[in-house]
Picture 1 (cartoon, rainbow, N blue to C red):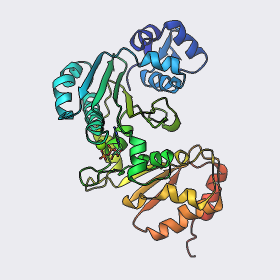
Picture 2: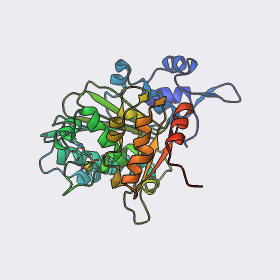
Picture 3: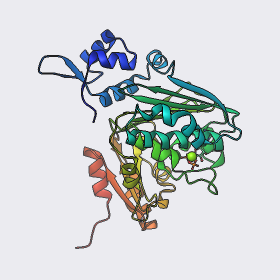
Picture 4: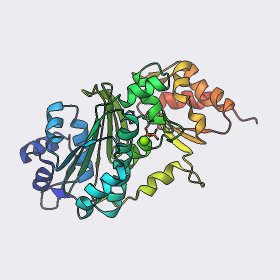
Length: 339
Ligand SMILES: Nc1ncnc2c1ncn2[C@@H]1O[C@H](COP(=O)(O)OP(=O)(O)O)[C@@H](O)[C@H]1O
Ligand SMILES: [Mg+2]
C-alpha cells in the first residue's frame, strides 16, 4: 500500500478542490486519518475507491473523467494493441508507474483494446489516460455493437442483465475459436476499480472495497471500459492469475457474486439458481459469494448445494459471505453425511 498523503496533495493530484475534499472527509464519504500533529491524512487507494462510488453523481464523474493527460482516436482497421502500448504508452508511463503497475496496465490496456479491435465492429476507438502520483486511470471506448447486446445476441440470452451475469463468470466468449473469455475477468480483478458500461448498464468491480455493483449508465452505444489503479502498486499481476488458475495454469477457478444475478436481496426460485449456475461446470472450483444477499428460498438453495453439485461432481461450489438466515438455509440444504 502507498504511504498516506496530505489533503493538499490529494486535491492537487485528483483535481478536486481542498474544500470539497475536506467536506467529503468530514461526512465520512472519503476515509481519512489524523497524523500525530492533527493533519488529515489519506490513503490514496481508499480515496480512489470512494471517488469511484461518487461516480454515480454524474457531475462529479464527468469532471473527473474529462481532460485526459493522453488521448488518441485510433482507426481500428489493422490496429495492433501491443504496438499501441509499446509505441505510445510504455515509455510515457515508464517513470510514472512501478514495474508491477506497468505490467498490470499493459495487460489491461492490451486486452481491452483488443476487445474493441476484435469484437466491437466499430471503425475507431478512443483511448485516454490520466496519470498522477496517486492514481492512474484508463479508458477504452468504442461506438460499436456493445459488449452486453453482443453477448445477449450471440449467446441467445434473455436480456442484458443475463448477458452481464454470464460475462462476470469468466470464460464467456462469443468467439471460442480465437478467444478464451479471460480478458474482462482478469482485468476486472487485477485493477483497483473496473467499470464496463454498455447497453445502458454499468458494472463496477471495486477490488479495494471488495464489492461489485450493477447500475444505470448513459452509455447506450458501444462499450466504455474504465479502470483505476495505484501507479506505485507492488502487487504483481501474477498474483491475480494464480488466484484463479490451477497447477497447470488453467483458468479453473472462478468467483461468482450472487447479488449480481437478481434485482433485490432475495433469491428464491430454482430458475434463479439455474441462471447463476449455468456454465460453471467449465470450472473445477467456484467460490459463490453471497454478500449482500439477505434471504434465500429453499428451491434456490437446494439447486445450488444439492442438485447441481450432484450433476456436476467435477466442480466444487464453495459458498462464502453468508449472513444469518442465508447461512442457516445453506447449511440446512447441504446433503448430510452418513453417520
Ligand atoms: N468492445 C466490445 N464490443 C463488443 N463486444 C465485446 C467488447 N468487449 C468485449 N466484448 C464481448 O465480451 C466477450 C468477453 O470478452 P473477453 O473477456 O475479453 O474475452 P474474449 O475477448 O477472449 O472473448 C467477448 O467475446 C465479446 O463478445
Ligand atoms: Mg478479449
